[in-house]
Amino acid sequence: MEMVEIVLLTVLVFFVIVSIHEWGHFYFAKRAGILVREFAIGFGPKLFSVQRGETRYTLRLIPAGGFVRMAGEDPETVEIQPGQTIAVRLVNDRVTRLYLDRLDERSNVIRGEVESVDLERSLKLALHVEGERERYDVHPAAIMIARGRETQIAPIDRQFGSKTVGQRALAIFAGPLMNFILAFALFMVYIQMAGVPMENPDRILVGSFVDDKESPAAKAGLKVGDEIRTINGQNIGVDVDKMLALIGSSGGKQMEWTVIRDGKPVNISITPVPDGENVGKVGIYPAYPSRAATFTETFAFGAKAMKNMTINIFEGFKMLILGQFELDDLGGPVKTAQVTSQIAAQGIEQLTSWTAVLSLYLGIFNLLPIPALDGSRLIFLGVEAVRGRPVDPNRESMVHFIGFAMLMLLMLAVTYNDILNLIQG
Image (cartoon, rainbow, N blue to C red; front, side):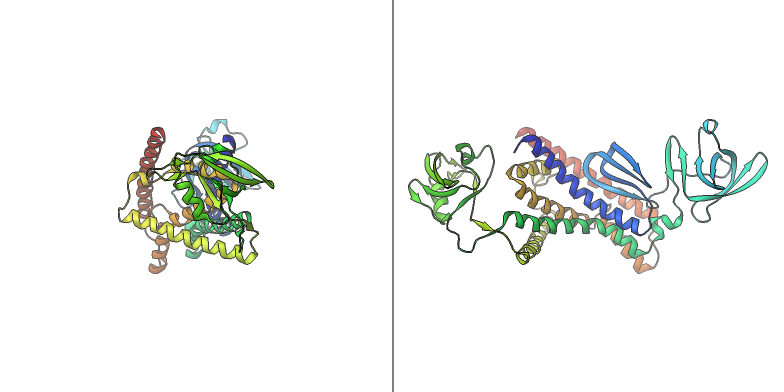
């Protein structure tokens, strides 16, 4: 597989699993009537930004996740205070735009000093205009313009905090839920692509390579799908153990293979590379002939894969909590991208399975009770449901801010280690 194609597939994998997660938040927030200000992929400085309807869609520099910014989750950055001079534009006797600066440059507007303003509940604005007191209704989707930036107002019924606990919980849980659905779907797609082993196989095939370019088998000219007929004159049949024993005992020694390709025998010379224990390796994954999976088998495989990978992921978390790891065991975006590119080189089937694993991991990780993650936010909602009133928003915001800062520090540490390992080979 060409390098450019591998890079594009690697980027696509990250884009898909993050986008589907954030789309879950976005979709259910919109269904609840929440104003979604921004749908972002990545963190940090903006690389690309476009406004569509009420929402700004952005692509940011650091590919370590994404976010959906909902009105009311954070303090609004633009406020209007009594005594402030502003300019407003009316459409059908309702304020549709409020200008907070550069007032002399605004045309077709009314200028005045703010006497009172409520942009959340009553949507009323009172101005002193040329010595007269004027009262205006404000459009629920009015835009405030300040420092060259437009911000849509958020009436109380469009804010995150105004919705029921159930609606808010669903908007938060929907992100991981979409990752679980994607993982399950991709596991089923994988088994449809790879098939299931035949009940009574009559031959062994070259399933895939450990490394498409560096494995001895690939260098010697072996190809995926070749039927392994004989090794050093010995018939292999369906005996994988015999094949592995012959390869393992021939480290550094040339072997003569006969494979069947397109119905014709092909002779290939391969020299296994000895590993640290002097066991020969040729760098292939053997496989049996397969058949198409039935619908029942496809569904069962998806469920089994979800179960097994979930167990493996939690085993990894357990080792992390117990401190049974070294820094090199952890991987950030760089290492994950490196592994993804290696798997992409093995073919679309393996990449599909790996994408399912990453999506499942992202969903589970986000549900952990770590501040700034979805799991922590769900805990705060659970506390609110039990108490009958929300936790102080300032305290909750502080908890999430500290958690996010700690996650970023950890991300920087593992990314630095990933880059160092990459440079050192």
